Amino acid sequence: MTAQRRVVAEVLDGDHVHLTADEVHARAAAKLPEISRATVYNTLGELVSLGEVLEVSTDRRAKRYDPNAHRPHHHLVCAQCGAIRDVHPAGNPLADLPDSERFGFTVEGVEVTYRGICPNCAGA
Amino acid sequence: MTAQRRVVAEVLDGDHVHLTADEVHARAAAKLPEISRATVYNTLGELVSLGEVLEVSTDRRAKRYDPNAHRPHHHLVCAQCGAIRDVHPAGNPLADLPDSERFGFTVEGVEVTYRGICPNCAGA
DNA sequence: TGCTTGACCTAGACTAAGTCCAATGTAGGA
DNA sequence: TCCTACATTGGACTTAGTCTAGGTCAAGCA
Image (cartoon, rainbow over all chains, first blue to last red):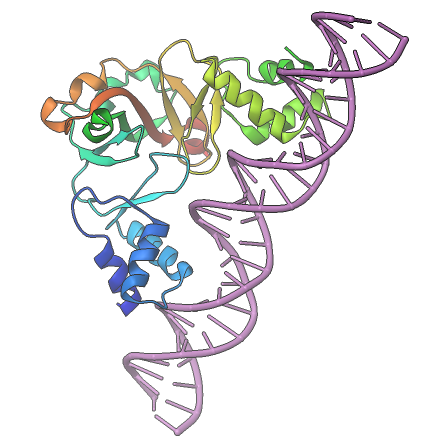
């Protein structure tokens, strides 16, 4: 555990945190100015492969990193400002996929992204 | 309707078709060699805004374009080879999101991506 | 026919996000 | 102290997509 890895882990802490790699880099650099982009990417990649952090891609631009990896959840995204909330829907969408719709696949997981307008953008 | 737009529309025809912009460009160029990337992007953008084609992003790399825009459906993606099938699950995941999990958002839609291993990759 | 207009198309430059790599730094063991 | 292994760095590179300046072409009109 080096100083670089510690600040990356510190930056990714809290609820409803979904930072891009660039944002992680900017915040890490605020604490440790000489940290490089490559190190941030390496560290994020390791955190993901350790299962400590999830990659989520709610838009086609940057990947986002979600430290809430231990409780399964989905995402609710504002179509205007891009705000993201973690949500825990009832039901299990995996069970909704009948065998006839599986095309012989071994289905292992499912990602659900709800899209809408957040109260801030709706009010404005 | 110009020749360029026609070939783009022709390339995007059929079931379970999910081409990247690059693949669309390659196939369109096979029929009309002088077609440019910008024209392909423009035409795809217009087809999307006309509602004739859906943008789907099942990985973080390229957007894919799905001509099956008139029947709501979700996607089943092979984690190894990236093959994509259109699927029509039972149930409505929108109904599974209780008000307490909506954080005041006006929820308008939902995308579901199932992930697994296709029969080809499982057999190999 | 020749001019004007506007839509469309092209090539190529540019941008953003991410990956790769050679060189450097550093911690810990012999 | 010296070695080795590994982490880090900066910068080049790649990929996907967007932007822009200029060119082409057909329709409308005198």
